[in-house]
Image (cartoon, rainbow, N blue to C red; front, side, top):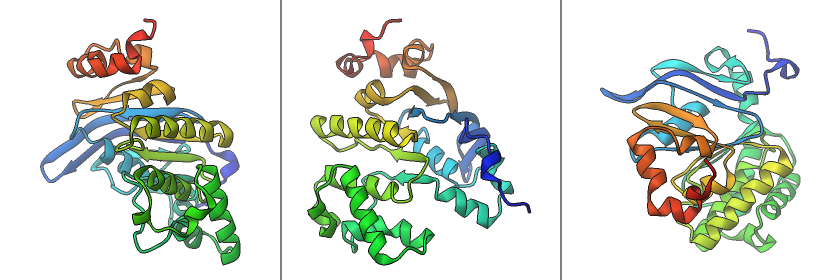
Length: 266
């Protein structure tokens, strides 16, 4: 199998899902699901509990294989890539799972070094320097490097997890409920951080969230996962007009008014 020539890839659509069906046993989570993640955007994904938002994230990452359909990465079918090319693509993706998913037995610096150890042959001393650089990028003090996850607040754990996601200088970030469990001030600061990193590093961001404030503040497009597929993926002003009961309930309630969604000109 020919190796990927990265200079000839379609970089305008880093990830594309086509006709995805996901299921566990007889329980079908997604059916005929299509979605594009466009270069440079922050795409927010919303849907009710149990709609399969995290399953979709895992499917796009290759952590779960779909029962039907396929996922394209930079225009190439994932299923046609060999191990060498899959590993090369992995280094272009950073992931922040719910809660940060830090290794409890490793300190923060060691957690950030995990992807560096897996994918590079850099000297340990350089890995440590890079880890401390990533800590600074996400707004954590240098003293956090030697702390363990149990010593961190929820917000610091999220930032440490984000620093690890940035360890390999990825082109894409996949964030699963990044502001869940944070107080309003901490969540707002994290939203600002995502925007700053996207702009400074020219990142493409796939963001699963329930947080209306995050959607309103950070997302270029919003994808609505209902009835086992993406019903609409568009700018927020168009999404909130979409004719569906769940959309009306989600974007028409008091929380959406508090977030400012109702102030968007239609």
